[in-house]
Image 1 (cartoon, rainbow, N blue to C red):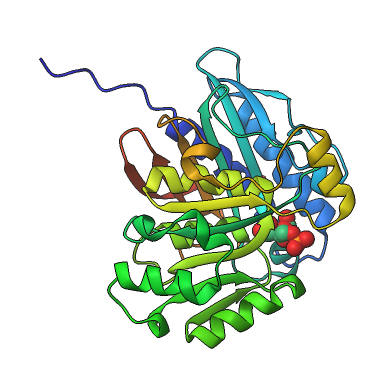
Image 2 (tube, rainbow, N blue to C red):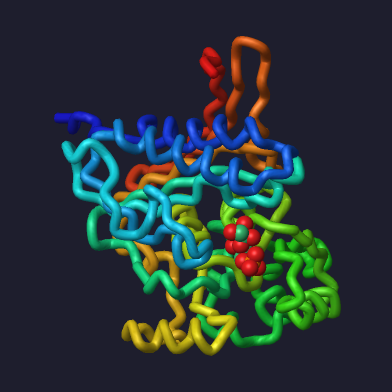
Length: 323
Ligand code: VTB
């Protein structure tokens, strides 16, 4: 006999990123980082309270921002009725993009069973990553993180059956990436330099047919773990390693008993197939349209992933606007 379909909390989680994106959207281009950030964080936290999960935030943003919010690591979220889960959130990936009215900002949440999400100490801020889609996943080997970029790009190009010059590499525009950018250019690949948003970049690289073939470089830790949820759900490939950018950060990681040198794959970042991932566009990214206010309605575009079943849903919604 056919098994009854299992319960899917995805739609409830989608409402969480929709709420954060709609709240953040009110601050697009208005120049206030604090207002944009707290609007999105509060909206996300409120929306999470109505989800039937017994959730715990695994990586909050207190380490990076040096300030506290209802979404700090260790905080409980959800009604408490429902599965015990780990939760990783990013109310806005790319706050400066929202503040400046620039494309690329999205809101994200990832959920997996309690105890399955990798949780570094809050003092760990930076992570080096490589992310590819399901076609290129087999090409990634741990050596890629230390090899010259040309080597990794050649492996990815081969499995994707294209030339290196046809690859697009997504990289955050930061001084720390000067050598990486030079190596990629010398290898002949194209670069999409981003001012912010490496979780969004990872999503583009992990989804097939987006135009972005691979994400490389050093971004945030929470962005890395949240990206790992999406990568697993999409069957893509990912390598990550903490990349402390100061001696204080390195010492804090060691003191907490973590090996800064350890390389992890998406399966080690999230040790379960029971992953949900949701993202909603704020200012409009290549994969998700931005928020549109249409008088009485606000329109959102979201992505909802469930790893267990491999479902990929793009969801467009109109919400009756109550300000
Ligand atoms: C990235 C980016 C974020 O932080 O994670 C980046 O995706 C890394 O830190 O949007 P630096 O900005 O210090 O390089 C953000 O820019 C902000 O959280």
